[in-house]
Structures are given as C-alpha cells and as structure tokens.
Length: 324
Image (cartoon, rainbow, N blue to C red):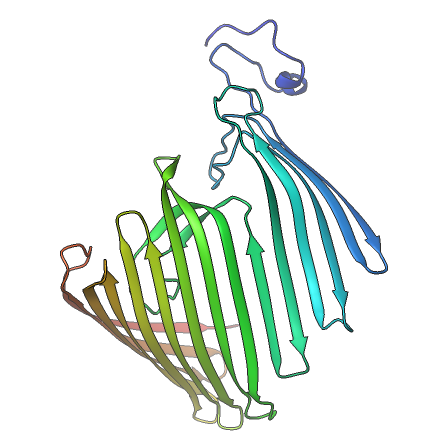
C-alpha cells in the first residue's frame, strides 16, 4: 500500500471509513433540492455540483466538472386541460480553474401537455440539459437495424399527438404521431468526443383499431428515421403492420407481424430488411399455457458501407407455462 496522507481533509476521510493515501482519489458529487407547494402548483429549487474527474462504477455517468443552479415549476390551468412542468437554471464548469476554457450557459427543460375534450391530446417536451444514454439508430424492436450508440445528449425535443377517431366502447380507434429531435456527442472509450456531433431525427405515424367483442386488434405504422454525423448520413423508411385475434372462446390467440425497412447510407441504397413473425398461444385446463411462434428475417444488402451482408434467417420457438 502507498503511504497514508497526513494532511488530508477531514471530509475526505468519511468519518474514518476511508483512509486517503498517495494513490487515492477523492471526488465529491452533491445534489440538493427544496420543494414548496402552493394552490396554483409546485415550485422547487435545486443545486448540483460534480467535482472534476468524478466517475462512478456501473452507471452511465460521464458528466463532471460542473455546477448547476435551477428553479422548477409545475402547474395546471384551463380546468386541468393544460399541464406545464418547467426547469430553468444556469450551469458552469471549470470549478477548480484547471482548464483554459470555461463555459457558462442557461439550461432548461419544458414539458407541456394539452387535452382538448376526449378526442385530441398532445405533449411537447424540450431540453438542453446534458445527459448520457444509449441511443438506438432505429428505435423500433420490429425493425432489424443495428445498433446501439453511447451518447451524451445536449439538446432534444419531442412531440406526441393522439386523435381518437372512434370513441365507441367496443370499437375504439385512434391515430397518433410521434416526432423527436436529438443532438448528441458520441462517447468512445469513456471519453466524450466533442468534435463528433450526431443529429437524430425521427417521425412515426400509427393507426390502432380494436374490436373488443371479437378480440381483434390492428396496428399499422410508418417510420422515418435519420441519423447524421460529419461523415455518415443514414435514413430508414419502415412501414409495419400487426394483427392479433382471440380464438377458441378467448382461450387462445394468434398474431401476425409484418415489417419492411429501406435503409439508405449517404443517400445511396444500403439494405432492405423484411421481417415476418407468426405466433400463437392457448390455455389448457386453466393452469397450463402453450406458446408457439415462427419468424423470418430476410436482408438484402447492396452497400459496402453497410455492416450487414445479405442473409436469410428462420426461427421457431415453443414455450410451456404452468401456473399453480
């Protein structure tokens, strides 16, 4: 063991639980908040400080050397048809003046929801606060396009809107739209790449119909997804359709899912992916359940930039469950 530090601060010893040595590192991360509730809503104040060089184990936590002061507001108006949740503050870095560059900026988030009667609703979300997350190139599990990217998100905005086409109790149907924009920096080898900026743009429109009397459910969607970096631009166009139906007096169900995607790399055709899944399940004597499914994935690749090669894959699954 390296020699113990005799002149270390009392705080760094953690009340005797930690013995600082020449090879030790001691960093602090502190977050405090205060909330007040009023008749019109809630107001809060928070402070966050993360020492330079601070790291954690097992979590996506790459932000350090920063201090934030912010105020929050949560309220509702127009007979609770409009809800507003906001956060506004200031953030600065270079806490110990160890860097030649210092930055101070205004940060904030806004989440606003609107409900117009029983048919139409939408939600808007905007933020320029930095956070770390795993970003999927295509955020739909039915679309077989890799991959996951670890990024630090700097700006993001999203819009969700839903319109109820039919309000019949046994035959509801709706159409919805989801759109999002995200600006991020990639993270490689635990280092944030400030020079590699990535923009994600996604839009998805879907239609849902349900017949509760017959147990029939339909879902149709169309996705547009785009990712842009300084060297690469990918675009995916992906329609999809799924149907499920209860059978045998509601003791079983069958389902079909079909999706197709066209992937373009730098405006050139990259690959086409077709995905087909058929599954079903049935209850036997109330306590037993049998599930079966088959799937087909077919990929046609035509670009040397693509990580995929043309392939075809069949899968089959069988499952049994017993409840007691």
